[in-house]
Length: 105
Image 1 (tube, rainbow, N blue to C red):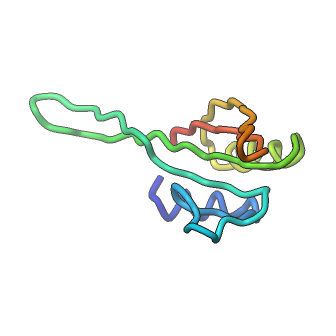
Image 2 (image 1 turned 90 degrees about the vertical axis):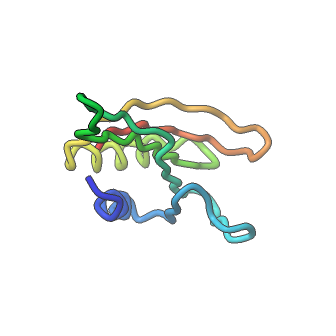
């Protein structure tokens, strides 16, 4: 899955979306999505890299727990045959819930 395909998939959620972060002063009110690729698994042999498998983090930020919105995002992943792991944390300093989806497109 290419960068453009990931963007197109995430745009289906109809939420503000940015790679890594929004510019200073331009962060929208929640809910919004951030995605980034913090790592990549490389398959190789004989000193040649044959394939790269990026890990993509999709971060959903909300100011309240929103199971329906989470389900909407999970349904998008399912429609696109994207495997995900899900975790959640409360960010006290921002007063946001972060629901993290680690996907392997």
